[in-house]
Image (cartoon, rainbow, N blue to C red; front, side):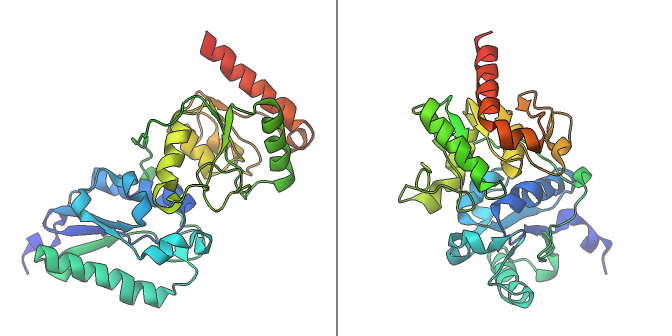
Length: 290
């Protein structure tokens, strides 16, 4: 066999198909494949994921994007880490992955053996990739929505009573200055300005990125939303993660974002959350005026 058969530059790579949730796509899938894209040369690059997240992959040719089944995208609550609860491992490999590889092979007249597959392991637990094998970079996407709003993302990983306290405080003291945003894994859907839209499924994540990028400050439990705010270099106030230091300015998910604000423990959060909200908003506004 010719040694050229083993050279990656003679092969096509398929990233995915990814059918998991937004959190793991941000934490693992996108940064992992971006690292591969930057470091391993292939003849061409294809990707398969949720159609409403295609904008995350502007480094892939648009014609090389494959949408997974819309029903899987629509069921956000059944997406768990890198999997979908309705899809067993055998079905994922023998139907979804197989069909997309065959479609690529036919459209490119490429032998299946020359299509390399990279993706996250199809397992329920969180994939364990070294941060050294991930490339996090700013997501360049803007819709030019309203700027300088307080953006509140009440992620379900947070304490609902604490989040309700924040919502009530914002409504009372910053009524026309804040928006509640998020996907279906956030609380207070009736107040969510994105969830109210009839085109929610199509635009949810584009709008989220735009609101975060243009925020006066993002307020959210420490989570993938914090990572996104750091990545977009936005002011962000977060709390409550067991590995809080990872999200600080010099942490693995801090990305040298000098606009990150969190130095308070859980006890203080529970008792004085509204005072902390006022403090950080005033801090941001003073810095903006300098």
